[in-house]
Image (cartoon, rainbow, N blue to C red; front, side):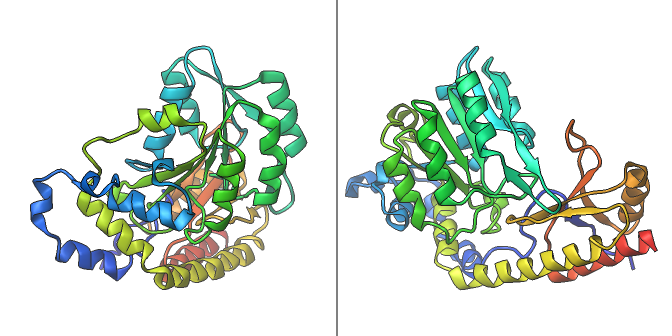
Length: 342
């Protein structure tokens, strides 16, 4: 019997969403498919933005909803960058940042990251230096960063955000733990040009629903207007998202399993000669492999219906990014990698 394909290449959450999300879909009021949301009649813009505003302790008009986090990032660039203006991004970062900047004629400049023995770190003095030299209109900081997995803690963020003046700063927190909300209000209150972007795709396992949101500082009124949906959001998707938010215990258990399996990857891959594994605070790990092994390992895994991301970027061209799947999937992949090197 042939095993089904196991995809560990796009950072989806293979455990799936909380059971309460399926209950919403099974019992959905299908009349909602035919009618726009009328939340405005009770003074709100929608049930999800209202809920998120409560969770983050901000006014509802400072919550922006989008078709996934990527939609909000793109809206931000379309609204705030413009031809000839500069977007500052991490040297090791998601290719999509550069693409959306180029779509509006913007320029991309990179700030450095430090590669240590077992992890990447943001080079904060280097960030300040690049900003002072380039004076970008928009700064993207992803935390945890894709594909390196490293984060900036709130205290470190506070220490550098004040150096970015009138520039718009976007914290791309797509890979953040969904329960980490306490520091966000303090940041957006202190820095009016700050946008904190999150998604329901990763932690909440709702990638197929395409639900993203952001909490913004008071100085981003133009972006808020640019992203306003006057006819409301997807009403059933909102209910599914709220069901996920109402299921913290389910997601905490998954996060604990993923953390345990990351340790498995570190232990096993770290013992393979020539392989270098980097610690991650996201739902994936990055590992450097000998370039001569790339084609053979890829073929070996795909023959076993296992798919991981083989990086092909200027700074990461001999690396693999492995999504942390279910415990069963991780065990299969670890054993397959081990068998290749035996």
